[in-house]
Image 1 (cartoon, rainbow over the protein chains, first blue to last red):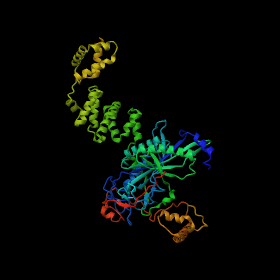
Image 2: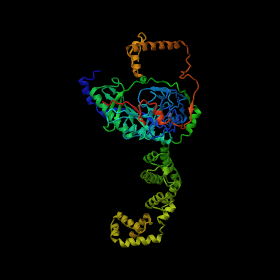
Image 3: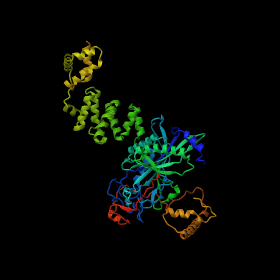
Image 4: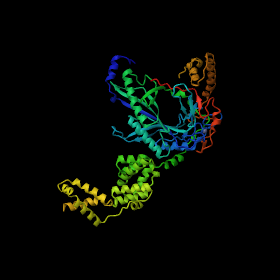
Length: 503
Length: 107
Ligand SMILES: [Zn+2]
């Protein structure tokens, strides 16, 4: 291998990090949104009292028998279809054997060689520095049960670890990608798109704080070295539970692998796959254990469970209920509603509820640009401030449409329109009622003329400025006009003032 | 996991490895006898290789041929915590208590 030979090591120092390519594959664990666990009727609810949601099945008592949850199967098929996966006609269950205190049976029921979802793909939008959208291949997605939760003594005084088995047996879908991702940003983009899709199709809320979406990242580098391309040993970074952790750990790990290679020259042939953990405090990965080869888990078919056959008609039925996916809706918003790509992305990332709201308002007021401005800015800001979802928003799409029609017709200007909206939100009333409450009345032409004459008479200095070419000074007059009569339309005032000043 | 046919399985590291994976401690004598027993079992099972199977028979994984034993996604009462923790070697009434789990964190 000659790793230590000095000339080689010197040559390695010449290679720059940015010449190497980062190769990333992800394993994403998603908790399926079922009421009961995968193989028993215990609740999957988060946050219950420790060990209050277990039974003989999920704690692995001798003689108990698991029975598969129909809804977990359906959700897995739904997820598979949305990721363009082949759905298995027949799927079976295997035992993955390992010892850990939070795994009461000593094995996890999983799927080894007949996963419910076969190969598929997910297209992601272009990320910075890469001009092309990318197709990320999915290798497979299989169903398995979650383990329990360990609470370790962190005082380092060797206290017992505590085990809570409420989570044991909760259904997980493990989605495995091919090593197709090429940067930390792409990995993040893949995960946000995946999360959005699973939200849209009601498969999982993907709440990362509650651990409902967890991710392992397999990372190595391809480094051009002389005539060849060197691959560094693969490292699996375990249990990443935030997008930030995914992005930072991959960035850090790539740099670490590059430095290690410059130091020791080890390639993929020289070292087994390593498992490392991400430490948020030190912002670095640390070695956990050498990865057991797959035979160490001694997978074998679970004799307590029988195969599941999935009929084509069942798949077709689930497919027909899938609804629009985020990518379909982005396309619709751009092509049919003329939204800019960035605006469409923001709108769709807010979830199906917001998109439906937008579609109803845009269709109702027949002006998608104004609907996008108002919903994309005002509504999202208000929802954000009040920490509400669109279902809780006090203004119905119909009422919102009525308001925008008044803005489009010029009856209300932008500023007054926003005041009306705030009033509608605050008092849960219609635009007509809000207008009445705010005392907004149409201003007739004679009133406007009087107002303008008054402004001109009282602001001779400003008028002179305007006449000597400072067109912007008219803004001061419009500001005063609104103070004198808030109902006066600034556009009309500007028009009228300009005419009167120039004549 | 290579085991050459001419070498008896009992003398190979594989028995040791299986014992380790199963968290069983075997002394030298037990290692040998377990190896012999394993070998007898493998011999016995290998008789199946004599059965002629045509190419179009797909592998079979269970002892029964039925499929789709499925339940609705409905809650059933869990076992009370007191009762379930009664089975634990050690507990504090809320959690199972197990010997400290140390993670290897040297990088
Ligand atoms: Zn249970």
